[in-house]
Length: 321
Image 1 (tube, rainbow, N blue to C red):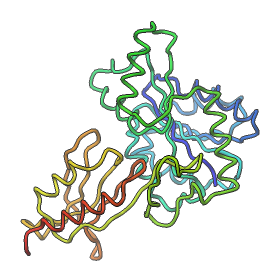
Image 2 (tube, rainbow, N blue to C red; image 1 turned 90 degrees about the vertical axis):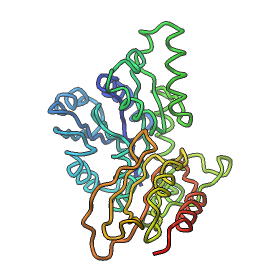
Image 3 (cartoon, helix red, strand yellow; image 1 turned 30 degrees about the vertical axis):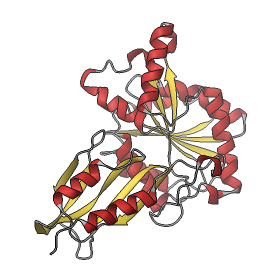
Image 4 (cartoon, rainbow, N blue to C red; image 1 turned 180 degrees about the horizontal axis):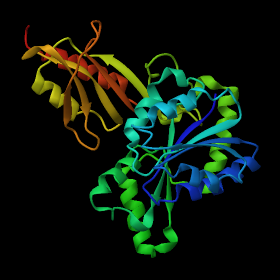
């Protein structure tokens, strides 16, 4: 099994620069590196910057890997041969919606030769939250991270650095801050760990996540992301469903599925919880004959019992047909 790392960060955060420092440190530890590099018609330029490193680099020009280039990205991952002792790093372009991409990387059963995705977000400390209407996207890229790296801190005075680090920590209280050497050591250890014990970080079967365990019970490299698909009641109260979505626990990074409402039992809607919001979005759907109302949750240490109980209460509140 191969560790899969999504590297995110806003435009100019320094992702490629970080890779140019990380890859030699991994190589020195005997860990082979594959890189998929996505950018807006610029991927081959950045790939050339990494060409001298001991890494196999695949450039993906075009749109974000979370949308327009997604199929090409997934096909590239499908085609990677088993290579124990290596790591795969996806450098996403700065406009990537990480929660959407994590949803695909977490639930695609054809990626069983990879671990569930880690996410390192590189934060441009000098420009943190100075991006006008893009501030929400920058925060969202931090929110889904499993590891954080503060870049360009040499441009800041001590007070600003402390303020930025505190703001990033408030946005994501779970992910540790790392430096190049510490992250290289951690990835090297993870590659060795999954090479010998794939079960501890494996994807399992289907979309069913393993029951969450306490921090003390987890293996040193147990993966934080998981996913689970749970059936919804055949009909639900619209108002109760909106409240159910609003009350989803903070561990849920992505939530979507299919739903039918008691006040309009004919159509089935695709529902999504909007990123960074407690609101639910409903879109028309044309489901297959065997499609059933369902809820897909992707997140960190998912509280499966609590989610199951919430769905049970949702069914109890459904008006009689």
